[in-house]
Image 1 (cartoon, rainbow, N blue to C red):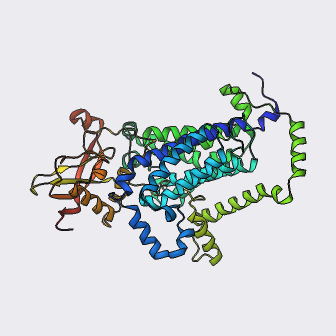
Image 2 (cartoon, rainbow, N blue to C red):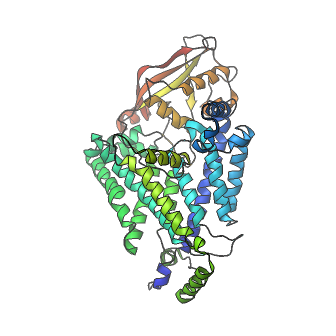
Image 3 (cartoon, rainbow, N blue to C red):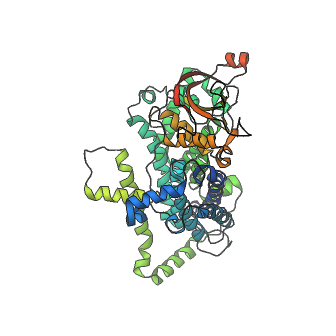
Amino acid sequence: MSDSPPDVRRQFSVASDVFLRALAVVWFIAFASFWWQLRGLVGPNGVLPAQPFLDAIAKELGEHRWWQTPTLCWIFGAGWFLHALCLGGLLLSVALFLRILRPVCLALLWLSYLSLCLPGQVFLNYQWDALLLETGFLAIFLAPWRLAGGGRADQPRFARWLLWWLLFRLMFMSGLVKLTSGDETWRNLTALTFHYETQPLPTWIGWWVHQMPLWFHQLSCLVMFAVELVVPFLLIGPRRLRHIAALVQIGLQIVIALTGNYTFFNLLTAALCLLFFDDAWWARWAGVAPAPYNSEVAAAHDRRDGARRPPLQRLFHPAIFIVMFAASLIITLPSLAKPRQWPGWYARAFRLIAATRSVNSYGLFRVMTKERPEIVIEGSDDGREWKPYEFKWKPGDLQGRPGFVAPHQPRLDWQMWFAALAYPQRQQWVLNLCEHLLRGTPAVTGLLAENPFPGRPPRHVRAVLYEYRFTTPEERGRTGRWWRREPVDYYFNAMSLKQR
């Protein structure tokens, strides 16, 4: 097949449309996943009730809370309104997918998720939550202004450039922070000998990859650094290199998704990569015909529209680009430099930008976790015989095969991984979780895979800290176990309601 005309190579109408539809899917997953767990996590009878948390912030910040911690919950509260936000998010995601008033849908989706993040507390404070907010906000400027349908149209270049810049920052900073962290495992290329075993929620494929020899892990680490530190520069290079770089980034996301559960992060990152393919690529490799385009007619329309627009309106797109680009530099700079003290204006600008959660600094796995402590919560009626509470996805039962749960994120399981790493600074919310198990709170026990006390709650609960490791193929063949463990200490000693 012959190459497409040069004009089509400069169009990105298909990519913009496909990206916005993929983003709609990610928004739907994010709202549905959290809504499924909302009552047990931050509901009135949840692990970390949202309303008392907001009341404490309001008492501390007063009127400053509106811009330091923005959320619509300051108006409507954190009761029924949290459910309304999730339901509205699902409906808006469907409308976005159907191309109905896309900029309005994107703006409301961004505002709804931003309003959920504060009452969601630690359960909605992950890098992919921030990435979704930033992507969703920038996508507002990419979406076409039309009621519904109407075919495709090439979108403003400034919006596409900002989303390109977002993917560049995401990948490049993820590689850079590993090298600048001082972690020797990244510098000697041995980090991946630990990663598959110690990551929050591994898969059974991750178990098999962990068994590979040292040279394989070192080579994989070297390739990963090339993808994160070198390939991002190809994203802004010539057309063919740009396409190759985007495909390489998508390939990395597939590998990550196969070996670990990282919610909708991989899908969202892959969606950003789609924006690097022009209409000619989609026509040749996906059979999607680009919208008709006539460069002379388009230029005439641009001149006519430019003459009709007031000067301020003509400056709108460049101004948005400059503001967002500058904000990203302000947020990213602390990850690159550590002066003794930042200027006052810089610190104020940083706090203001960070409060929106819509311009962020990125960098996954800055320091590699070399061990895997796990909290096992147990209950007992007599203080002698203890029965474990099994979580749905985090390691517990030694014979439980690591499974696939992404793009859904079991946020309690994820947070238990962080709580174990924080030992001995024991997390208060884990104590709250134990109290709810002593009370048999249905909203909380519903987040677990197995409640060993279905009839009535136990009299005593304790949290035991273990060190978990993958078994070897020989051990698994002999015992059928995917994990082995050794006791470390009590995370929380045995407790009862009378003690609280």
